Length: 74
Image (cartoon, rainbow, N blue to C red):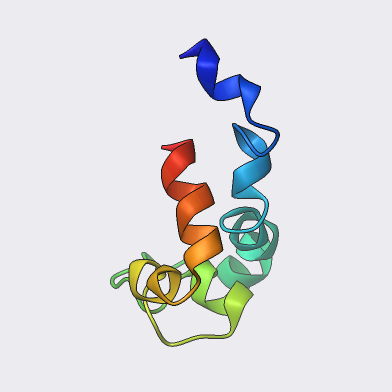
């Protein structure tokens, strides 16, 4: 596990490009939806943050560098 920290893009740094924007928009998203349950993968904070109708995994496949960074974080 400690080997993963040797990479300069390791750990939380990788999530800055993928998931942090969704966390940042979460309060706005919840307010706009009346705090309703999220019922699908194509209408969630991540979609609002990236202005896309695609789900996270479909979008990530079209962004190879971000996909590589995200998967290495997992």
